[in-house]
Image (cartoon, rainbow, N blue to C red; front, side, top):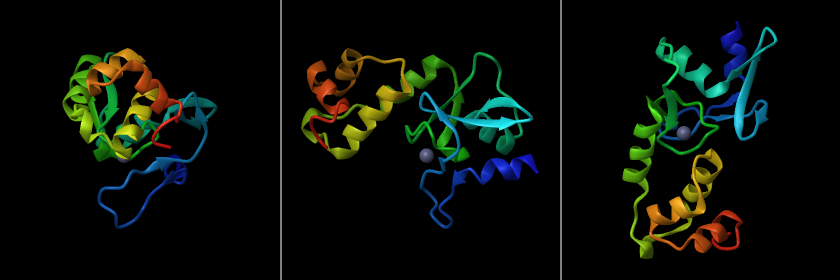
Length: 143
Ligand SMILES: [Zn+2]
């Protein structure tokens, strides 16, 4: 029953094999929170654990292949360490500067909101000046 309560708080687009399933319940500091018997759970972990029937070790994290922190679609998630996540991000988001578009701008914003990064770090990844990254994040460009 609880699991059904959980999935009611996720916006699932039926029939779309690639769309994100966004958490529409309680959000705190950018992360979905699911409350069960007065205990709070990280919505992403809950979704992953229920679906894959496995439990994460303390040093393991879940990261998104879609870079959408509110996405609860299990096949948009990967399990690994912080180092693995960073390697994945670097591999996926490195793009030539003149190929930057709105999707990349949104990606930069998401990465920034996930945390664990700075304007400088993102600038290195994308080959941009940190001020440009700052403009993107503060929506001064690519609005
Ligand atoms: Zn997703």
